[in-house]
Length: 243
Image 1 (cartoon, helix red, strand yellow):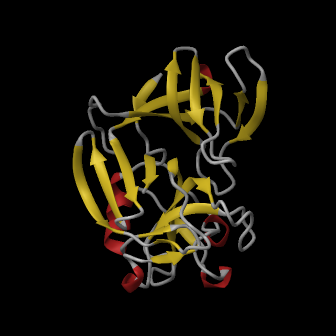
Image 2 (spheres, rainbow, N blue to C red):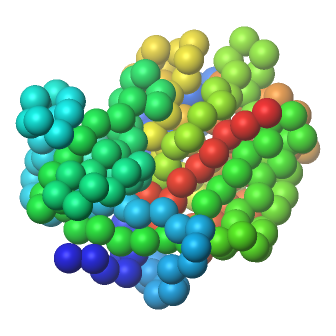
């Protein structure tokens, strides 16, 4: 069954989500669930498929011959429905991008175990230019400046997707108005503030740092920009970090 993309939200502990972003977990507050209605958009020639897990767990296979690789639970550790970004659709089988180390890991899942949806949105991060651009198909619809990881804790290039969305209780805190978890991890920090070094895109209470290398690997953007993303982009939206 293929449906319009449904937005999901995490009821997570932000200290464990944004594990590669700021210097201390003590600055994080427990978030409120973030939610908003999905927008129905016609698919364009530039679109991505997102697979939402139907049950409480899903088997990921090493290949289409049915060699099991791992089992992944849903919802994820932060309370968000489990989704995957589809890289190849071969009917009964889907090759998906996995939210595990190493970054860029892929596996195969059975199409019968998920619900498919489409989005025409994607986010591109240019590390060298300190800039993000959101595309709807071929059309740029939002752009702005970013802060990236410091030299010792860089933001790794790669192809990722949004895994959860949280809204901090303290809107004036280090994570700003909203934070999207990413499917990627810091290449340097194997653990951080009690978490696994997961990357994120989030707002900030220090807008003066935007346009510089300032984080432990996460991408910081203005609160206006992250609020726009929270209202317009769904969990599963692809994110490409380059430069």
